[in-house]
Amino acid sequence: LSPEPVLFFSMGAFFSLSNMNLTTTFKKAGRTIAVLFVILWLLIIPFAGAASKIGNYLFPFFIITGVVSIINLFSSFNEERLRYKNRLVNKVSDFCLRHEADVFFIFAAHSLLIPYIAKMLNYCCSIITGTSFEITISTANKYCFLLIVCYLLRIVLVITICTLISSFINGHMPKIRKLLSGR
Image (tube, rainbow, N blue to C red; front, side, top):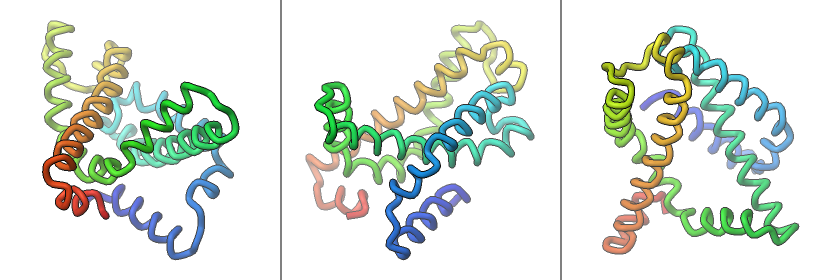
């Protein structure tokens, strides 16, 4: 158990017990949080994420502002979907609604997959760069774009694998999936 999940579960419990709407509350500071998220993202790249002392201090704030920004983004997608009949927004929104039950499973399982996906991507980066690829400040400075691509690819791969596992469990063991997805 790390502090971040405890923070998010505690925050969710607080909002629920206080009868507050999460998206409405976060929307009030939406632009400010989004700007902070982008600034923190740009700052943690040269500090190699949580791999350096300064990056380690910035990383929790990056995660928190990132989560709030994502909540605001998808909340605005839903509002846009209701207001206009934008095809792209509708497709993204429909996809999210279809996989709504996978979210808790992804949250619970992602930390189990991340080390293996990161190791695989580091191996691929070693092949691309021709060096032993370890994430350090000098690596971040030298291969900034590659690190960003690997970071985003890690997210996509972990979510895809978790969604596939969740769908498999749903198709073959629906009662277990209900238990695993918090229902």
